[in-house]
Image (cartoon, rainbow, N blue to C red; front, side, top):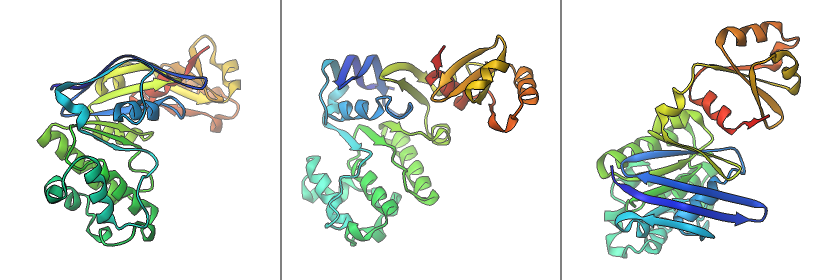
Length: 286
């Protein structure tokens, strides 16, 4: 694995919000899942790496010239809805600096892999939202780039389109050693795709490393419930998450808490694993 992008001391202020990334590396031939609650700074980080926003402090170093080879599919689609699918792909290929004569080469495998043929000759305004999303995501994969940044790419996609994207990303990573930064709220996608994981919350860097290091870091269970849960939790460790309380404890104590709680239907138990560790990371200490 080689480092495609390295961030050092990166800071970005937007109003009262500050994104602060002391150090982060994105390696080739890896899918890096980017996790965090709404407003954590994930999209801000993506825009900095894509060059659509500039850092206030620090530096982003693209090793081996990768800065000129970044594909970006942001959360909001940038398609021209009056143009056809193929015209949009050609337009974004030109924006990326590819001459028109090389269009077939830089989309080789992409159109077939994502099965975009039915959308190519239709104006994008006549496509469903999910179909538009598929064309939009494809615009970030043209080339392919050395670094691909996808911001919640599977929103509105059906299960078949999602699976085609997963398989295509697997192929890019294995055969062309592309680095992928994949922003999602879906833990199942992280389990399916990623080998590395980045967690940020309130603009603060919480975790970066192997997915297994996060998912296997504890044998504890979580119990999530209303604020009244603290009255029954005793001396066990708990944190706040949004308008709920998160209790971290053993399986036996979690089951006892569920049994003794007056309204157990208000509680949710989460066994050890990636989702539990992620929720605990983004919860606030009391």
